[in-house]
Every structure is written in C-alpha cells, then in structure tokens.
Amino acid sequence: MALPLRSVDQLHDQRLRRMYNYWDLKREGKLLPARSDIDPVDLSFCLGYLCLAEVVHAPHPRFRFRVDGSNCVGVSGIELTGRFVDEIPLQDYREVTQQAYEQIIDTKHPHFYLDDEVWDSRHYQVEGLLLPLSADGMNVNMIIDVMLPNIAPDR
Image (cartoon, rainbow, N blue to C red):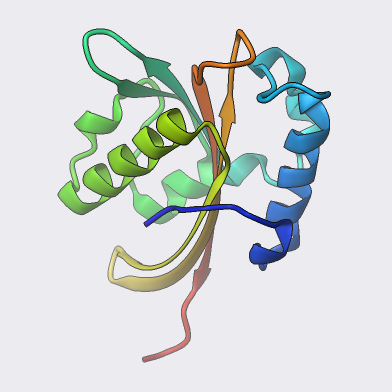
C-alpha cells in the first residue's frame, strides 16, 4: 500500500531520497513538475528501476507504462512497456498498482511504499517512491514509479 510521503526521512534508500530531492528541485515553486522538466541523464542512478506511467483520463483513469525499467522487468518477469496497468496478468500486482496510481491523481503528492513480495519464487523487500508529474502544473498526467527490490533474508 502506498502512503503519503510527509518527509524525505521516511525513505530508507539513498537513491529514493536523491530521486525525491531531484523531483522537488524541478518543481521550481510549482505544485508539480512536468515531464519536460525531468532529464533522464540526471537519473542514471535509478534508471533501471524507474517506471514512467502516462495517465489516460477518459472515460476513467487508466495508466499506460511508457517505460518499464529493465531491472524491474528482470525481477517481475513481466515487460510492461506500452501496456496498461489493467493488463498486468497478476491480479494482486494489478490491483495494488491501480490503487496507488489513483491515489497519486487524487492527492497530487508523492507517496512511498514498503512491501514484501514474491517474484519467481524469490522473496523481495521492496521500497518504492511514486512522484506525480503534470503538463499544466496542477493535473497529474504522468507518474514516476521507482521500485527498488532487495532479496529478502531467508525466512
């Protein structure tokens, strides 16, 4: 479950802190930065773990993955680039992602998540950050989702 980010101190991984600080800097006094404010060259520290979802608003919110980071694909085994969230074959993953992205549209604020997940019979501890983007500075039209999986210690 994604929770509102109240402070960068809630993030454990330094890459997520760095990503949040970059996003915050790119707002330049606006509520939300635009996709055009974000330079992928600046994000080399997390590119393989970064997903970029486009919001399609009509008739109801749908989310299309414009980018699905190669490391994310390697963990999940599912290539999502070009696909919609409602096309994710795993029901739990689909529902959690849909709900989290809808929260971002509603709140227009960053969220983070900590989760234990199983992918291909391996347990992972996942920390992630969701950051809204906006072409007009007010309405969310894209979401950056940085997911950092770590193999969990034996249970």
